Length: 272
Image 1 (cartoon, helix red, strand yellow):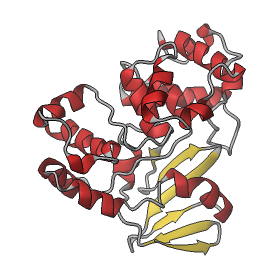
Image 2: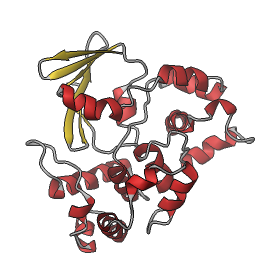
Image 3: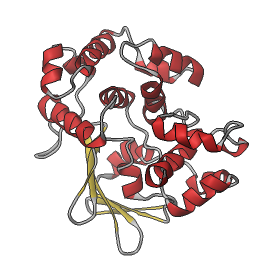
Image 4: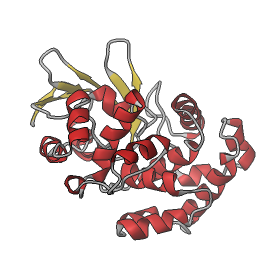
């Protein structure tokens, strides 16, 4: 990857395995929108970004060098060799065909707090409604980034809300989960930074101890917010996929189960 600084932008050349649509609109993050010009706009870590792929196949990020280094390089997992990982995963025939068809899916490194709240909201919900709830949450309680975007609100901010305040946003029964979660994170009863330091097994146990969090939410939060790239979330789509693996996941997935899961998940939604 070659990084070039431009006026008010960063140009990335020779980025392998990054498809903006497949990565930003696949259900792992809910704060990205596709603009009319084909670019994508979103926010993370209190920063706004517009990113597009130009006619040369390079990526143009409307951001500063400092913010690219501090936020976006890690957010898009640009230091990980996805091309090499995908070649390893392609030792499995099903994943090989899926990668060839949907090449370019990456795991976004989101903030643990945003990820865990987002996936609590995602329970028994569709992507359109999840995005709407999270947008209302951010627009109402998040700090202003610019004229159009707000940061994801902190646990301290959300702890001042009542269950009814959450429900007004459209969270439904999840409001009581979010209230307890915000209170416990704000008070230090739940220490997300400490959970991130644990082994996958212990981190999962810690999340499952949180009120309102089940296995699917825990696994999604671990993969997309705590950088446990070996975590393999299972929902109704993945249960169907697992029938193709009666003897368990293949050895070539080891260490990168989460990346394999994203390809298989996308394949399942489009083919099963």
